[in-house]
Image 1 (cartoon, rainbow over the protein chains, first blue to last red):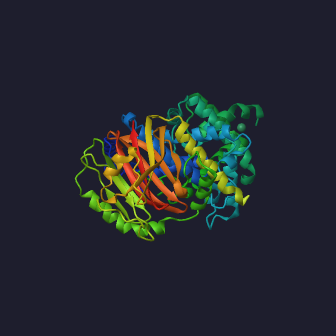
Image 2 (image 1 turned 60 degrees about the horizontal axis):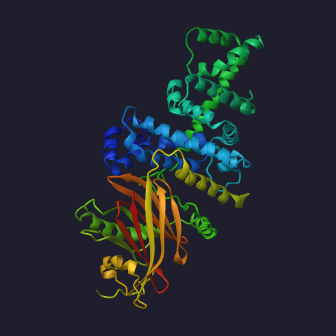
Image 3 (image 1 turned 45 degrees about the vertical axis):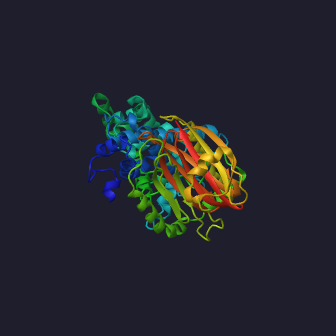
Length: 203
Length: 168
Length: 150
Ligand SMILES: [Zn+2]
């Protein structure tokens, strides 16, 4: 079952069969696409937002938007590529609005990245597995904090590169920008993370 | 190593790490890194941060994602505009798990929906097609046909309705 | 700090919901929904003239008195969520989430405090009406009629 959800090689009918059915109004077919692609989509959202509940909400939101614009999906790209673009845009939208709407609140608050958040499951705590020890928990917290200082566009570029493993050209297409822009966003993002996380890598 | 050289090389290190550097530019950067401890450490830092991020996302995404579903479910929160009371209801309800209660009604719903499913498909004009019905108590679905409206009727889970419908 | 968590999360939810309304939505298909809230009981024999049609639909669920408590038209778009209070402290949530097969896909929930009385999704043809009835209210029941045109 996992392989089906991982969005890797589908074990049954390929995506475009389900897409075609869904375009004809078969809601179950779209459900199949959701089940297949939700984990990959969620990973992008979690990387960009650093917060479980918000990532869950926005992934669902992305599927709603995908469903609404399914008629415009012509199949030039793979469904997963098209969906990734939507997820990225939904998260970018959210982050940009969060920036505008909460000028006094920090990113962390807007995203619920709050040390006392009783059940907000943060990226930081995901590194807190039994064998990971304090160091990795601290690193997780530090990464979330450092990621939060990046611009939404820098975060998007970094996630598409590190999590999705896309080439600069693919990232440029996803984000509607030039490959040179991708290169400089990644440079600034990594430079900043390096500076902020330096102490965690003291050798 | 000449720090001036590092300044000019540094913007390209990230692209080098990503194997997105080509031709003469790549030669120059690779040549510098071969002899520069600082830039090698920067590359190693980039790699470590990337690996930590990937690992965090990997572990994070092993959570239960069944909440992402189709048709979509409303989040526990009703949407704005909300009154103060609705806000309060929301804050209370989000800590309460409705599933055990719903499970009790599931068998009956399955029966009702099952009966409904074997009915002929309604004509698309002026009609309602029901996709899913979950209710806390017993529920009856009367599909509309021939100008009749579709009705979803909820019965009280605890006690029978005190209102007896009058005969037609 | 601990107490502030729900409000932070509420803020996040509000932002998400707001996105659904004002985001760079692909499809901002306008939709008109009308919700009528009706109190049906066996006290008296008043039937609001506007409800004669609905009364005739109810078959064995007939009551002697029908009062229209509220008619609320919504002009909205696909993807926007709405909540409206119902009498007796209940809440009605409406979420038109898609258009397909010539129908409007709608999710409707009715909650009463912690109780989730109804959680349903259906496809509504243009101009069609669905009746949701049964929740106890005063000396009778509530009936909610939802119709859509788009
Ligand atoms: Zn150097």
